[in-house]
Image (cartoon, rainbow, N blue to C red; front, side, top):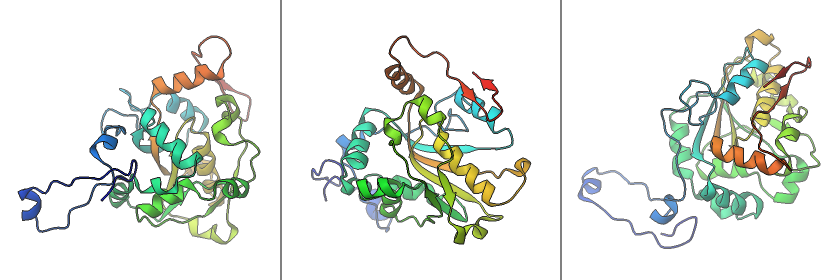
Length: 267
């Protein structure tokens, strides 16, 4: 049995307690060295909106999203910090195409979805062009590795520039990139949905996906449904500030600006 991340042998220490349980124990996907590279998000003391560590119920970013979507009671859950270890793994899996790495977190993802109840689990899709370039959808790869059933109801319009190469300002100005497959629009009426993506940066992608799902339900804005989203990794505020500083040629970014459809600005 080898580690799914570094391929080194994993030594499984069988204890008396494991033997007395008379149950099949789960074999770890990662060796102890690789497990230490990935930091799980705490279950308490986090923002209810995005799972970032926060003393308040909603962090600063989520409070701004509530200004744009006041009728939307949102809740995003993430499993890991997007730190150096996760960033390295994501580079190898998502951008270098090492599809074997999809198996690294199957235990955590499977366990999470066993605790959830939803009519449909919908992964965030890639555009056809990006799918041809990459060869696989990284989110679907994770779900399939964890033996989680999903419904690919969303389709994505063509994109000229990958999300990973866009600045925060460009991501926030992104127009609606998603649509619902016509044959599945009726299925989404009066149902619960969990959206699944890999990384939460600005939240713009997930809110676009949530909006198009609600629009397909032909309901009033005040009846905006309570969607739940699950992310593999979430950057810490400190990590986001480092990323934002790289996007600026001079000076640190203290505040960022959101502009709604009516031209109202929020800091």
